[in-house]
Image (cartoon, rainbow, N blue to C red; front, side, top):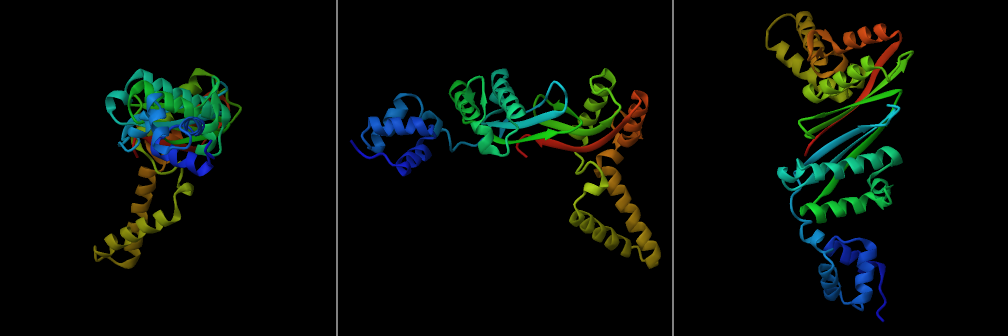
Length: 286
């Protein structure tokens, strides 16, 4: 019997995309012959994964879920080849299963997520099953898990965009309909307007520096005194913050109110305090 090495198993896996154990079993059955092992996997329908591995996965769905106590959220992006499959309810069910696994396991990285189990099988096995059932190359592109005093989610355009928003809360019933509606509204704002940060303190300093250099150059072209130019540049930076920072943006459902003002209004109504901490926004294929 041939000596089946880890390198051989790895090579076969790269050739076929089948699981490590399946590759090892195939090599044992083929007595170490790589070509025969591929045939073994093809016969079992496992090499079909590899045949599709090189095909582009620009479609798919984004799934966002929140735990029952609304303190943990998970968002995942599962890619496939066509929009037809990406919008299929069966495909979305696979994405939801992966998101549930992420929510429960709170994995540190992609490898940990793929190894996480749900309903007695690993996430990697779930994705492989999705490939066989849907007939398209499927890739788990990315994920995020957040924990906070409260977490809200929103799915836009049937899975084209998924959002999680985390909040610090005190003296607020996060299970109330009022808070749930508020959280959904803020998450919808993130989906619709795509801010770059929750507040101005979170904006990357290099981004601010770059924007300011542009505004100063624009002001210089006006030919006005330097003091006026500085005010012009500062004013444009303020406008940038109001357009790009979530809490300073005009609320899409009430443009006369900022998200910060809406937050304060809800907090007062619920008799506590609410602070928007951060958000995760996954746009399909981004």
